[in-house]
Amino acid sequence: MKLNRIKEILEDKGITQTWLAKKLGKSFSVVNAYACNRQQPPLETLYEIAEILQVQMRDLLIEKQ
Image 1 (tube, rainbow, N blue to C red):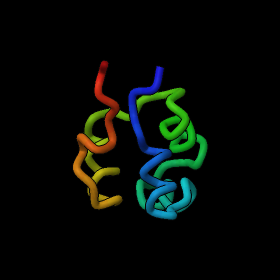
Image 2: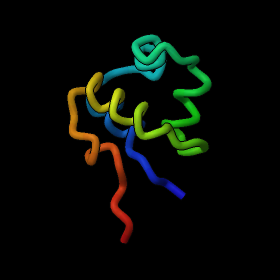
Image 3: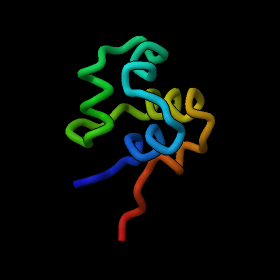
Image 4: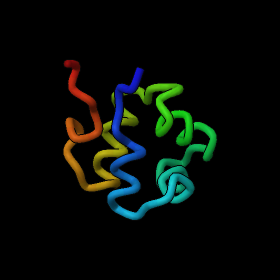
């Protein structure tokens, strides 16, 4: 089940998962798991991702339909 839009936001902004991993101080494999929705980031990390990508935290989430 897709819960976040991290991958889409990164693609829209032309930012790589490797770059985001370096900014977060996390491994590429962890960020890749977030982006591919295999694992969900903790709220604190999601907030940090939003700040780094300069988007609202809610923009990273998929609304339940």
